[in-house]
Length: 139
Image 1 (cartoon, one colour):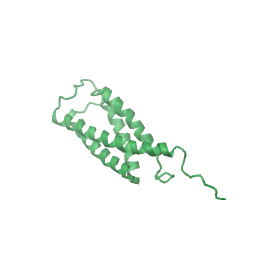
Image 2: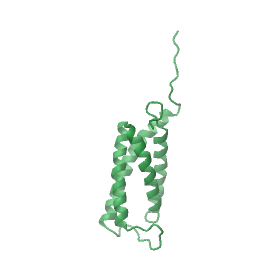
Image 3: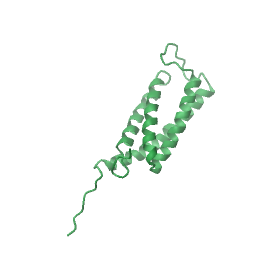
Image 4: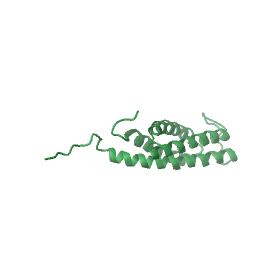
């Protein structure tokens, strides 16, 4: 009589694996939107409302370049996550964490959009942190 052995993979791995695929897609979309947001801030300095008294005041062109570069890195990491690359998981967690901080600093310029992006970033970080492609942590 044969016994079926249980997988060494955690029970939540199916959810985490599906979440990681969804996180990869969200990273692609989020990165592309960051790129568009950055381009619009670079092209027209008056696209977003001017904030007079803000502690972290940066010229909108500066914000545009920050968002553009972050968007390109997020898109690359999102493609890597969808391809199952081990490096993409760690890069994704780091860049999405930085992106979360950037969106917090961008709150006065686009409050609703920043809050939505922060919530999505939390989900992406969770999905990438709990997904272990081979049943064990890659890092």
